[in-house]
Image (cartoon, rainbow, N blue to C red; front, side):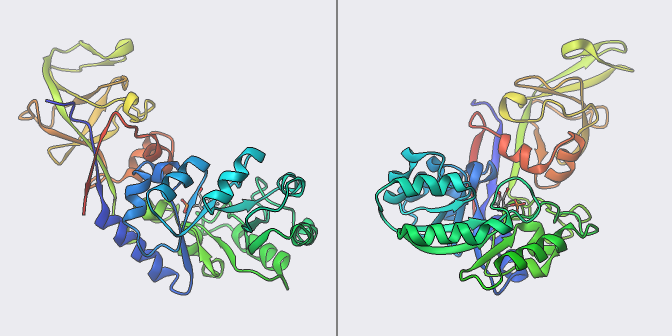
Length: 358
Ligand SMILES: Cc1ncc(COP(=O)(O)O)c(C=O)c1O
C-alpha cells in the first residue's frame, strides 16, 4: 500500500469560487492569482479549471513558463516583474506581462536595445509600503517608459494592505491615493485582491486579482468562508496507520510532553511537517477521524501525528483522518496553528499524492 497522505482537489469547488468572484465583480476582468503552485493546489491543474479567467498572476518566471508551455494563451502577469536583465529574453519570448514597481527596472530596460513590446502593469505604492512607485514618481516613470518606445499596453495597479479588516478605513485611504495618483492617466486599473473585491466595492475597477477566495479560504477577518458562500477546494487527508492502547502516565511523542491521563487509545496518522502539516499545530488541534472531530496530542513529527481517540473507541487502522478541507475549515486549522490559510495551503508538498476531481 502506498503512503495514504492525499490532497483531494475539488475543481468544481474552484469553479464555484470563481463564479463567486464573477458575481461580486461583474464588471471586472479577472486575473486569477495562481502563484506558489496555485496556492499549493497545483499550478497547471488550477489554471486548466479556470477557462473564464482573463489572466493569471504568478510570482516567478518558472511559473509563467510552465503555464505557457502547458498551452495557455492568455495574459500571464509576473507580479514582481523581472529580477534581472537575464530574465528579459524569456519575458519577451514567452509573451509575459510584467509588473514594474521600481525605477531600477526601467533603468535595465533603458540599457537594452528595444525588443518585443512589453505589456506593463505599473505598480503604485498607495500605502502597503512594500513595492511600488510613490505617487509623486508615477508621471516621471510613465514618461521614461514612453521614451523607451518598446512598451505595448500600460496598466496601473496597486495592492491593498488591510482590506481583510472591514473596520479599518485604511483601504478607503488607499483607494483615495490610487484615484489621486492615477487621475488623468491612460490605462486600465487594478486594485482589488479577494478581500477588496468582496468587501470594498470601490476597489473593483477594470481588473480584480483574487487569490485565496478561489481556493475556498476566507479573505475577511469577520466572516468565515462558509458565510461568504465559498467552498473548500483542498481536502488534506490521510489514514490511521496504528491504533495503540496506552496506560495512564504514558508520554506520547517527541519530548514526552503529552501524558495520557488515563488508559486510552492513541491513533497514529501518516502526515507530518515533512508533508507541509504545520509543526506548530498545538495539542488539541482538531482533525476528523471518520468524520468526527478528535484532537491531536503531542508534537507533530516529520511524518506522523498522534490523535486522542478517547471519543472514538472503534477507530481502527486504515480509517480516514482529515486534516482540513471538507468538514474542517482550513482557516480554523490555520488560526489554531498561529498562521493563515495561505501559508498552510502553500506548504503542502509533493510527498502528498494529489487527486483531482471535477
Ligand atoms: C499583487 C497581488 N495581487 C493579488 C493577490 C491575491 O491576494 P488574495 O489571495 O488575498 O486574494 C496577491 C497575493 O498575495 C498579490 O500579491
